[in-house]
Length: 75
Image (cartoon, rainbow, N blue to C red; front, side, top):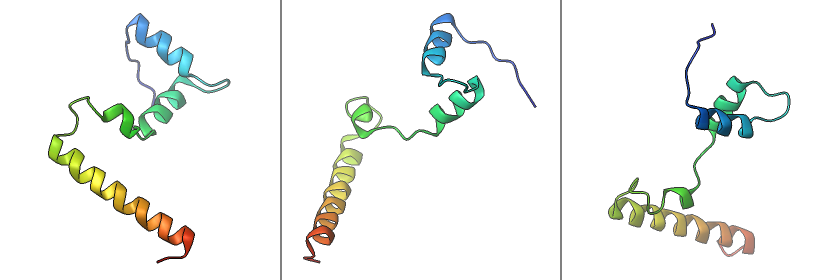
Protein backbone atom coordinates (compact mmCIF):
# COMPACT_ATOMS: atom_id res chain seq x y z
CA UNK A 1 0.00 0.00 0.00
CA UNK A 2 1.39 3.39 -0.98
CA UNK A 3 1.70 6.31 1.43
CA UNK A 4 2.20 9.96 0.62
CA UNK A 5 4.88 11.84 2.55
CA UNK A 6 5.98 15.46 2.47
CA UNK A 7 9.65 16.38 2.33
CA UNK A 8 11.32 19.76 2.10
CA UNK A 9 12.64 20.94 -1.27
CA UNK A 10 16.27 20.37 -0.29
CA UNK A 11 15.54 16.79 0.79
CA UNK A 12 13.66 16.16 -2.45
CA UNK A 13 16.63 17.43 -4.46
CA UNK A 14 19.02 15.17 -2.53
CA UNK A 15 16.71 12.20 -3.02
CA UNK A 16 16.38 12.98 -6.72
CA UNK A 17 20.18 13.16 -7.02
CA UNK A 18 20.60 9.81 -5.19
CA UNK A 19 18.02 8.10 -7.41
CA UNK A 20 19.48 5.67 -9.94
CA UNK A 21 18.13 5.55 -13.51
CA UNK A 22 14.84 3.62 -13.64
CA UNK A 23 14.78 3.39 -9.83
CA UNK A 24 11.63 4.43 -7.99
CA UNK A 25 11.81 6.87 -5.11
CA UNK A 26 10.70 4.03 -2.83
CA UNK A 27 13.60 1.88 -4.00
CA UNK A 28 16.01 4.80 -3.51
CA UNK A 29 14.79 5.36 0.03
CA UNK A 30 14.93 1.62 0.78
CA UNK A 31 18.49 1.36 -0.60
CA UNK A 32 19.60 4.37 1.40
CA UNK A 33 18.03 3.13 4.63
CA UNK A 34 19.51 -0.35 4.15
CA UNK A 35 23.02 0.99 3.54
CA UNK A 36 25.40 0.48 6.43
CA UNK A 37 27.02 3.66 7.64
CA UNK A 38 30.78 3.96 7.28
CA UNK A 39 32.69 4.18 10.51
CA UNK A 40 34.29 7.39 9.22
CA UNK A 41 30.88 9.08 9.14
CA UNK A 42 30.27 8.18 12.78
CA UNK A 43 33.63 9.20 14.24
CA UNK A 44 33.36 12.60 15.90
CA UNK A 45 29.59 12.76 15.44
CA UNK A 46 28.81 12.04 19.09
CA UNK A 47 27.10 8.79 18.07
CA UNK A 48 29.62 6.69 19.99
CA UNK A 49 30.96 7.37 23.43
CA UNK A 50 34.72 7.30 23.94
CA UNK A 51 34.36 3.92 25.65
CA UNK A 52 32.29 2.51 22.78
CA UNK A 53 34.83 3.82 20.27
CA UNK A 54 37.72 2.24 22.22
CA UNK A 55 35.92 -1.11 22.32
CA UNK A 56 35.03 -0.90 18.62
CA UNK A 57 38.63 -0.07 17.76
CA UNK A 58 39.84 -3.13 19.72
CA UNK A 59 37.37 -5.38 17.89
CA UNK A 60 38.42 -4.01 14.50
CA UNK A 61 42.12 -4.44 15.29
CA UNK A 62 41.55 -8.03 16.44
CA UNK A 63 39.55 -8.77 13.30
CA UNK A 64 42.29 -7.26 11.15
CA UNK A 65 44.96 -9.37 12.87
CA UNK A 66 42.91 -12.54 12.31
CA UNK A 67 42.40 -11.68 8.64
CA UNK A 68 46.15 -11.11 8.16
CA UNK A 69 46.91 -14.40 9.92
CA UNK A 70 44.51 -16.23 7.62
CA UNK A 71 45.98 -14.62 4.52
CA UNK A 72 49.57 -15.32 5.54
CA UNK A 73 48.86 -18.81 6.93
CA UNK A 74 50.22 -17.93 10.38
CA UNK A 75 47.09 -18.88 12.30
